[in-house]
Amino acid sequence: MSAIDFGAFVAELATRSGQAILPFFRSAHATEDKSAGGVFDPVTEADRAGENVMRHMIKHSFPEHGVLGEEFGTEYGESDYVWVLDPIDGTRAFISGIPVWGTLIGLTRKGVPVYGMMHQPFTGERYSGDGRRARYEGPGGQRALRTRQGADLATATLMTTSPALFAGAEQAAYQRVEAKVRMARYGCDCYAYCMLASGHVDLVIESGLKPYDIVALIPIVEGAGGIVTSWDGGSAAGGGRVVAAGSKALHEAALALLAG
Image (cartoon, rainbow, N blue to C red):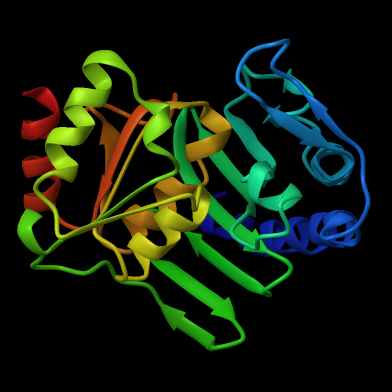
């Protein structure tokens, strides 16, 4: 079965998880801190409700598949197919009532991301891709996604969730890139990658990511014509330090600056 055959199932995962999550948005709900005294790392009832729904559906439809989720860990992670789930990517935005969060649903085959969707149930937007093509569906209708080609560093828009992600040598490396671009914007989590795939921004640079933060987004960006790697040019599927670019030339320029 090819990755594209999972598209209808992923769409249903998005619908059902959105129905579980959305009642908690902009309402009174409990928020816990997973950081154990470190940097604030929130989790809500909505996170758990959304992931529970998706795990139940996957177990019912594909009992031989593995699941890696932010809230409930890994089951059958050695399977050829593993679903990688983040029920709310951007929980800080979620608890602040700002709609720049999304549900990330990724699928890997033998460790390689082969399908992904970002669903924002409040705005009714879905971004999906299989590494060869990417699509948008939402209030603006349906369309193919394409990254913006031809931008160089001097004309590029760069995004990162927060410059506070970086410290020490990483901070200096990131600042070398930010100093060269036309504009930098912060705070959009998964939406930054979808805006890159849509051709609205040109670079996303982050650090400290987990697999569930990025796996679903790789096939979307790549399907739209972009590139996603680690800072050393390797696979980004394991998370860590990630750079996404709308074109090969811009990606190479960013890597060179990050390497110093």
